Amino acid sequence: MTPHLGPAGQEQRARPGKLRRMSGRVLCVIAHPDDEMHISGTLARQARAGLEVTIAVACNGNMGGLPEASPAERAEVRRREMQAACEVLGVRLEWLGYGDDDFMQHYQEDYQATEKVFRDLVRRVDPHVLLVPALDDYHQHHRAATDLALNASVNASNPALVSAEPPSSMVPYALHLPPMPPTSFTPAVYCDITDTFELKLEALRCHASQHQHLRDQHRTDVFGLVEAAARLHGAACGVEFAEVLGLCQRFNRVAPVQVLAEFFP
Ligand SMILES: [Zn+2]
Image (tube, rainbow, N blue to C red; front, side):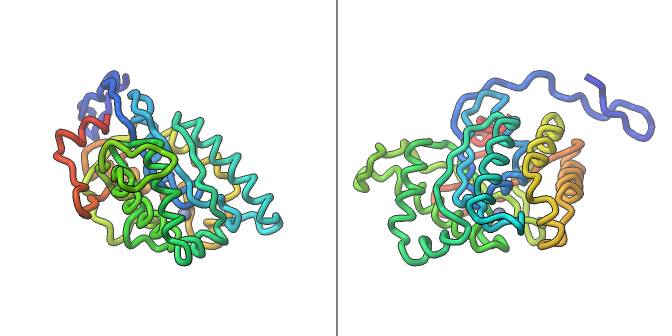
């Protein structure tokens, strides 16, 4: 593998050769198709190392982008895009079945039933590590998905709460994805994604319906943002490209670094 050369031409850092083989389960809960872009390089690395990685998407994206399309057409395009992105990353995909236009109604008006959908997801996957959006993320769907996933992941291991799925084996260690843009976010964990950065871009390209939408609605050049963030985080930890995660400090969520390292190749 080509060594990274610094300005003086000397070898800066040997890249790790093969990924260490790992076992374990990682669940990343997001609100919309394409929200995984913040951590997709890490998810691809985890999948390549042998971890069982699942992305669960709360909403079908039926209100995002494609102004000429109907909500049903939009949801179908987003479903195909998300499926393609997950195939690129090598991860499993689960849909939780909400629309962009009804998720908050379920969250606010029927919390218990909505939490149960998330709880059964956690029971099916039984993750060791749970990745969720930041608690103070700008988007209400992201914040709601985080709240539901964290509560559900405690309830999922409680055998007194009976559902169709058997109780999960543990309360998973939880970490937060950075928001977009990553302002007012303190990274706690840096993940070297130099080896999977191209896969991250390829997965992002799958969400073609969103690129113009993000530019128009959010003043965001998404490829520019993703590369700038990966280079910045990489510079902070001495690699070419990196992603970051934040600590989740709610009860029983923090893992010793030795345990965390078992899930981050
Ligand atoms: Zn989103």
